[in-house]
Every structure is written in structure tokens, then in C-alpha cells.
Image (cartoon, rainbow, N blue to C red; front, side):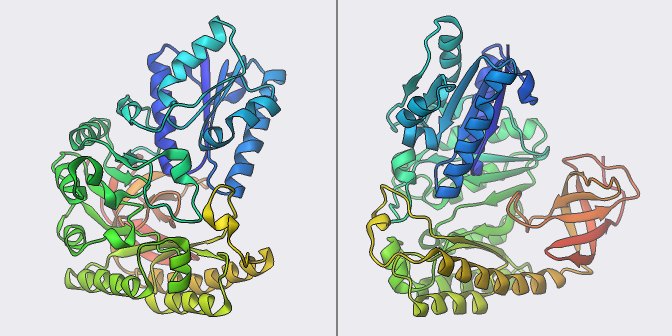
Length: 451
């Protein structure tokens, strides 16, 4: 029996998908990428904001058609949208045979067998968000060779007023440090050179089970693993980025000089309404600390952040504060999102909701400002030689593409380069940067890489 899986949403969701793939493979099912050839289809959904929900629903409907036109015998919907709207999905999309919530991934094989052999259909399985034992199962890594996400926690306790995630994923739960290191060792044995730490709040790692933050200890343990070249940090909340963590990023040769910090706004009034645990001054000071440490080490730390425009009550003055912050802080990478009103969140009931047209205008303004900043930063890399992880060959068959330690997969720009030597995905090569093409960098391999 062949099984196919569609994974939507964030890298954390992708790890869940890879765990389900591993369970299904161990359960005797053959993994198949061609959806038209699958007997069982799994759609792992995202339900974070309106656009993500819409994408998930459209994908479920698209796959549901395979039960009419292809050999698909069973359709299972999992993930955040499933957690949030399980009964609606079962009631309104008759082709769906089962719905599993975001704590029920470990039941995927039992669910398939129940559908196929007991003929039970149209049921839901929503387990309490209490443990994370299912994260300890073997995964089938689907990312480009040489790189893999490593999930260190589940759930969130931050309770930002715009965010539905605590309701969908439950309270913050850390994995045991030894379990994470064991998984990282297995990834290294598979040829993974870059591990990317993910969780709803990676900087809070360890607080629940060890009663104090343990991210630095985890990083040090991971950096001892032979074969791991890069350790990348995503989802670091600003109030938890300590002096000690910055020192570790700077001094540890295996930690990418890169940090992802969701700041979300720079107006104190909006940050307070959002339920954030920081303020504008603290954000400015944090950027200064990161910049000064980077200069001291002669290697600038790349800072990535995300911001929300159009939050309820955001005035012109609030937006100007955010705009000024972005102009002056000159962050290396910035993502801007328009506020999405999500039922079940406190912010959905706030007064002074901002119009869609104003959200769009503010979004476009910030992105245009950041475009100029990013181009300025990237152009300074011309003439420099960067160590690059090869991902694949471009469609033209001439250029390879990959990333340096200053780019995260999926969300940041790429480096395109030529090589007079044949290269493989997962190799590390030195690339001299010759030019820029919008956000992307163009270069060439400087010398034959080691085998």
C-alpha cells in the first residue's frame, strides 16, 4: 500500500510530517510522491492565520478529488487546522475519512489500519496536549540533503493576544536534552551538516523540565557532535536573548552567526496590546548588543525578524515608530505580515480594527524600506568568500545554489554559483561573491572542495 503526504505551514509542522512518514514507513507502507499513485493520502495542515487556513482547505479539497479520479482509498487530515476544526472538516468534506489533532500524530498508522481493515470512517481523534512522546519516533528527513530541522519543544506559554497557537498546540513542553542530542547524532550519521533548532519559543527551552533555560547547554552538547558543521537558531523571543546566549553565538564556531527574533512591533502601546513581554527600548538595546558583539568578533551577526502591521488600534503614530525602528536598526532580514483577525484570540475582540487597505499600504511601505536596506547589506558581500552548503542545481543546469551561515532555508535569499568541479547536494564549498541579483548573491567556487 502506497501512502503520500502533503505538508503545509511552518518548519515545526514539517518535522511532524517527517515523523508521520517515518511511522508509516515502519508500519509497512511505501512512501510515494506522486499523489495519483497513492492508496492513502495525509494532509498535514496549518491553521495559524486566515491565508494558511484557506490554503489548507483548498489542498484538502484538491486531494479529496483523488478519491474520485485516482486510486486513493483513504484521506486523513492532521495538524493545526484539524485540531481547530475537526468536526467541521468531518461534517463538510465527506471524502475525509479521519481527522487527527496536533497531539495525535503517533496514531497515524493505527488510524490508517482502522480505515482500511475495520472499515471505520469519518471519525476524529483529538488527544490532550500533554506529552510529546511522539516526537521521539524515527523521521524521514525530506529537506535538502545536508540540512534538517530539529524540534526541541512543543506548545507555547507566551499567550500573545493575536496568536491561536497555545490553543492548537497546548502549553510549552521541552524535550529531554539527551533525546535531542540522540536525534542530532542520528541526523549527523545520515549526512546532515546543518541542524536548525525550532520550537514555538526556542529561547525558553528547558524552563519547564529543568526549571531554568537550557538552550546554551543544549547548543554546547550539539556542537560536540562530529559531522555537524552549523547550528542555526530560529524563533528566539527577544526578552530571552541573554548576554550569555549572544556570547555563545559569537564564540561557538559551530553556531551560525545568525539569529531569528520575532519582534512583531516597535511601538510600546502596540507591544502592550499584543501581550508581548518587551518594549521598544529593550528591542533597540538588543539590536545594539548583537551588532557590537558581532563587530568585536569581526563577523557581523545576521539578524532576522518579523513584524505585524495593522494590529487593532495601530495609529499612524504607532506605525511611524515601527517604520523609524526598521529604518534605523537596519536588520538584515525582515518579514512583514498583515494582522489576521483570528477567532478565539483576545485581539479579535479588540476595538479599532484596521482596514485591509491600510494594512496593505503599511505592509508595502515597510517592505520597500527593507528592500533598500537588504540590497545595501548584500552588496557589501561582493568580493568576499563565503562557506556555502550546496543544495542543488538550478533549472538552467549552469548554476548551483545554496546558502551560507547567514541564510536560513525557505525564508531567506539564495546564493547562486558556478563551479568547474562537479558538486553534490550537502557538500560545503567556498564561494567568492561576484555580484547581486535583487536579494540573491552570485558567485563562483574558488577551489576544488574536499571529498
